[in-house]
Length: 179
Image (cartoon, rainbow, N blue to C red; front, side, top):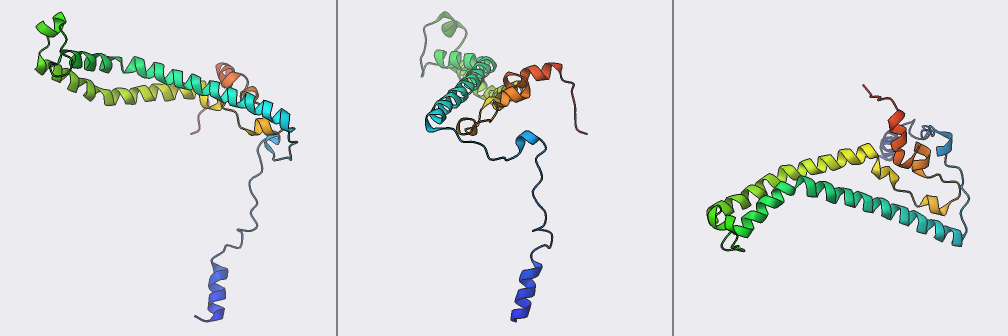
């Protein structure tokens, strides 16, 4: 290829409008990227501790919610597998009355298999319940950005939305859907 063809090829690969289109403007005046005033070092450490504490509490609430939902939904699996392992002669071989009269090794094996088979759909149900509850309560919006600690004037997310994790705003709002 000649030098002229190389220059034409390089020039055609870029669009004429690619350099002219600016980024989209912010929709809200509060979201503009204005230069914010940084906090002093001591104040930044205090606010960082507050933001980390808040985010840790929100994480613990999410974790407790996950544990509670999974414990309730997976309770049938836990009970079935427990009785299967408890009464099997090669595992625990309990001397309980129901292990001697009702459950032998074959039925204990069946309980263990049944417990592990029904675990998969129940895990999906538990995760769906948690996700819908977390979305409804907007738990993930409760996490605060580090910029809250580093700069003055950054608002708390839940404060802007009308309450703690915007739950109060949802009570009075109408349902809207994009079609």
